[in-house]
Length: 291
Ligand code: PDD
Image 1 (spheres, rainbow, N blue to C red):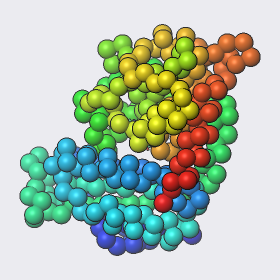
Image 2 (image 1 turned 180 degrees about the horizontal axis):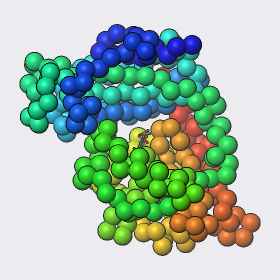
Image 3 (image 1 turned 60 degrees about the horizontal axis):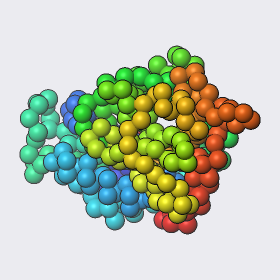
Image 4 (image 1 turned 180 degrees about the vertical axis):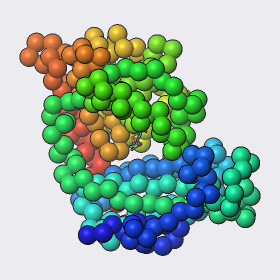
């Protein structure tokens, strides 16, 4: 089945979908995005993603081409037209195509923003076998720009980070700034130590994950203590367990950091109980609220 994508108001077969070569998303990474997961044909935490999208747009003085309600209708239409059961919807908004290359922002009254969206099918994504064994990460220096709280498409360094991880035989990379972990290449990072869940506090250094927010709510429901503060790689390596969160991976146990296996005894290098519980309860809660 050929995929139907959404481009500036039209539903189009992917082979016919076109964006201008002058689009600022293409030329300057002048664009923001959201990834919303779909389980059983329903959108997970849609409102959360729309709230963050509005903030990203506002931080960059970029016009919103559609309301959240219109985007909901469009997402549902993409799910229906593509018969999507489990997977993601990728949504991108750029500052449009001014018809030439110029560093100065175009007047939004003259140049409308570009909006595109497409589905990515991942059958059975909530039953990922990776969640049963956990993932390994390496640490790399965080060399991204200083406004990581805005979800822009400047993903070259995170992409390079994934390649560094792959080259080192690991699954992902945790980025480190001034000695402390910021986040994963495309996810938020957590450790569990002395019965506490520790994750970096929000700020310009990291993206405020929509999954992070929901998981911290779930942690509270489960009467787990959360400490929002920075941690370093040494503390992470001596932690009882670790995990990461994102819209596409949900809660994913991290079992090895820079070659050091986490946990001890029979639990050495295995997903820990806190990550396992959070993943289960998060998925239960999100399925209940899916739209
Ligand atoms: N990435 N931090 C970074 C740098 C991210 O790119 C992401 C999401 C997250 C987690 O945010 P959320 O829980 O809202 O997905 C944290 C998406 C999934 C991606 O780029 O594919």
